[in-house]
Image (cartoon, rainbow, N blue to C red; front, side, top):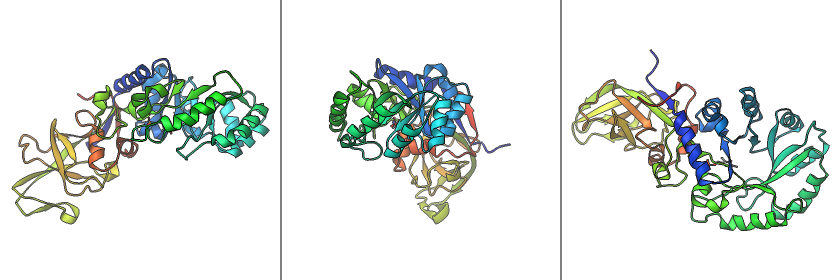
Length: 363
Ligand SMILES: *Cc1c(COP(=O)(O)O)cnc(C)c1O
C-alpha cells in the first residue's frame, strides 16, 4: 500500500474561481496563469479542468506551451518571459504562441527572423516594478523597431504591478502606463494587459483588456490576512494524509528532532505521514494549524523529511488512521502559509513530485 498522503485537485473549484475572475473583470478576457506547473497543481490537469472555459493560458516555458498545444489546447498561449533565442521564435510561429518582448536582443531577433506568419506580441513595459520590461524612455526606439519588423503582428501593451496587494497600490504605476498608452503611435487604442489577481480584486479599474489571474484560480488569497473564502474563492488543492502512529508522552518529554516541543501536560501526539520531502514547509513552526478528522489542532515540534507531529490531546476520538488535512478543504492554505511565514503560492508550487495527485472532490 502506498503512503496515505495525496493531493486532491478539485476541477470544479478551479472552474468556479476562473468564473469569479471573469465576473470581477467584467468585459475583459482572462489568461489562466498556469506557470510553475499550474502553481503546482499540474499543467495539463489545470488545462484539462478549465478546458474551453479559459480565454487563454499564460506560462513561461516553451516546452510547456508545446505540451498544451499537443494536448489539444487551441486557445491563445502567452509566454510571459518571451523567447530566449531564434529557434524559440520559430517555435512560437509554428505553435501559434504569443511571446512577451521585454528586452533589446529580442527585438533584434524579431528583425532578422523570417517567419511564416506575423506573431502577436506582448510588449512588456517596466512601470516601476523594475523586473522585466522597457522603460518609457526606451519606447520611441522600441516602437521604431517593431514597426520595421515583418515578424510582428498585433502589439499588446503589458505591465505588471509590484504592490497591487499592498499599501502603494497601483495608481503610481498606472500613471506611467496611461501616458504610454495614450502616446502609443500605432493605433487609436492599443490592446492592454495589466491586472494580476490582486489588481482584479482590489483595483477593478485596471481589469481591462486581458487580465492575468494566477493565485485566485487556485483558491489562494492574494491579500495577507484576507481569507480567500471572503473573496468568493474555493480551494482547489487539498493536501491530505493520515495519522500513522500515536505517542502518549508525560510532562517534560519532548517530540522530534532537536526536541523543540516540550509537553506541559500528559500529551497525545499524532504522527502524520507528511514531511518536507512532500512539500510541507520545514520552517512551519509548532503551532501551525492542521485538521484531524475535521477538527482543528496544531503541529508540535519540527517537521521532518517524511513525518510531522500534531497534538491530539483534546481529540480523543482521533488516532491511527485518522484523516489529516494539511491544507485545502476546511483549512485554508493561506492560514498554514501565514503560520509558516510564507504565502500560499509557495506551498502549492512546492508540492513534491512524490505525492500522488488525484482529481476529484473530497468525500
Ligand atoms: C505570475 C504572474 C501573474 C499572476 O499573478 P497572481 O498574483 O498569481 O495572480 C500575472 N502576470 C504575470 C506577468 C505573472 O508573472
